Image (cartoon, rainbow, N blue to C red; front, side):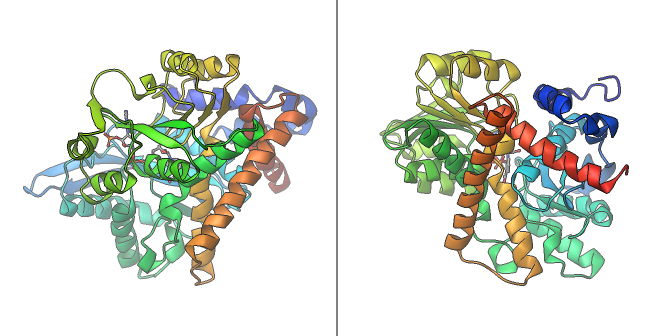
Length: 434
Ligand code: NDP
């Protein structure tokens, strides 16, 4: 705490991991001797930089850019860029820290990092977004590369932004280095199924949790939060697996559609028109309503998939979900449930999966995109999705096996933390004190 003052979210993420490690340290004295825990909590490198840009009216703006290169024991740093006004070092570090263990869980050769800016893309024109991305990359380019650090998207950074960032990287370096960024467009080095991967992966993970309880998505009611990339595709796969997704949200409120969310309409509203969820309700006034007070977690459901942002679901929301009969919660976002909410779920016997396991499908498919770039190949949607599904099944099983091995059967938090940590710790031991 004293070493990283004010970085609240990073403290929360670190405490959540460390709480799981007592039995690991007892079983592996070599980790303590090599100061692995202290070293893993300290980023290998942190870069903070100025991002000046000019808006359409000719006015100069200034934002702050970040890239935290946290741990490269398993491979090049890998993790997204977030553009949101709330971004500061504590958020980038919590995300980068989680990313280390998430990436280890995928079984792919990737280290952990994260970056972003306090830039707010809402209401900005295409030209303004492009100028911001170009300015951001004008500093970032010297720190990244396919063997060093491979950024991707996150909140506020999708295919359009990755395009502008890649264009500027290519222009400055004079290299068509496809593997330097993931989440690229399909026509220029992107992977089929990457757009869908995080949401689909979360639904696949929840499906395994349901199977472990002799259940399935069939006939179940699902609520997702958010209405961005992760939320849309988690809803799409849950629907394909037989559930009805009745609600989603954005930062202005939530919508309930008792007939089940019309995913084509939601995609059109969010991905094409870049509009608010109110535009969805305007066109589905027969079955959908917009609610601007309260929380999306007030809507009764069997399965909750929080897919918006950190600490969006607190103990009060968790108690409401439990009271309404929710039995499975899988985090599509990073750390969306507060520690108090997680305690409510575990005390009530709700199956709960942390983001570092349940949302790992996005970064896993990014690693598949890197594989395709390295071999100058492009795989079919079905093949890539099948690999994603297998990876999510493996992560699920690894969490349960590890939890059992360390005396916490059925606890996905313990399983994910220990399985991810021990893999990174063993690699750090092998690489020496560096
Ligand atoms: P998007 O920007 O596509 O969507 C974010 C969604 O969450 C929007 O609907 C946004 O609403 C909503 N949201 C953001 N902040 C709040 C808030 N404070 N209250 C209510 N709603 C909010 O981001 P992604 O879908 O890509 O990311 C969502 C989460 O998933 C993040 O935690 C991210 O780190 C995580 N994640 C993403 C991955 C990916 O591949 N994209 C991979 C793994 C994890 P509004 O538009 O009103 O702001």
